[in-house]
Image 1 (tube, rainbow, N blue to C red):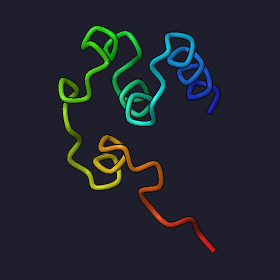
Image 2: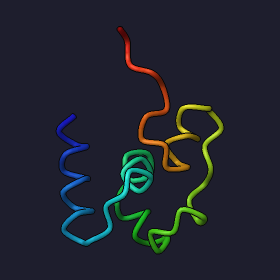
Image 3: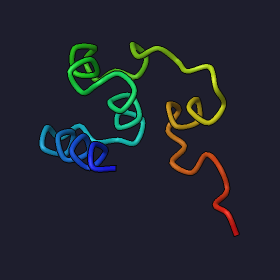
Length: 66
């Protein structure tokens, strides 16, 4: 969890924070994302449905438990 906080802070400091970029940073690293111009069309699309929704910008890809 701490690593997500650090990644989010790093993206915010660069003025780049979005949830899709946070997801990409978690999976590929912030340096990878920056090297690809922070352009989600240049970040490989994930194959699993939940990650695909996050990659697409859906911040709530699944319903929370009750």
